[in-house]
Length: 151
Image (cartoon, rainbow, N blue to C red; front, side, top):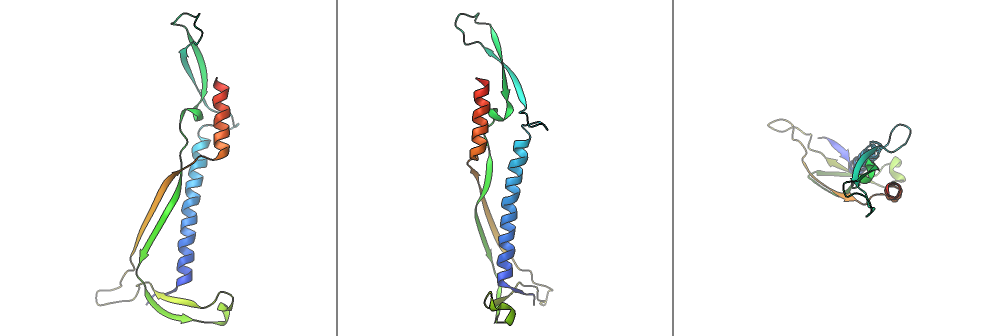
């Protein structure tokens, strides 16, 4: 049997979820970095649009220098929900001197024991739901400033 402590399993699941959330945050930072050069200046696109002056020739155009960041809607994802279902065999409850701070531990069987056809494998059903998060306040302020710089 592959005996494991149940609290260690929960700690491992918790760490995995935190790491997944950290990866989404790192992706968001890398995404924002694509819109600025190495000196921190925004990357821009020049656009030609009709002038707004009614006295100008209708064919007259003006050039707008638009930061790329302001042209795209922000997209940040975050973990909304995690569902985890698995089967384990319950083992014995241990109370040891080392566990006096944390209380007793529960051993579980993760399905590593042999059988007539070899090792059984523990199975788990994992469902993770991601959702689009609201952009950060700092992103919105930077974007507002960049948009105002265009007008």
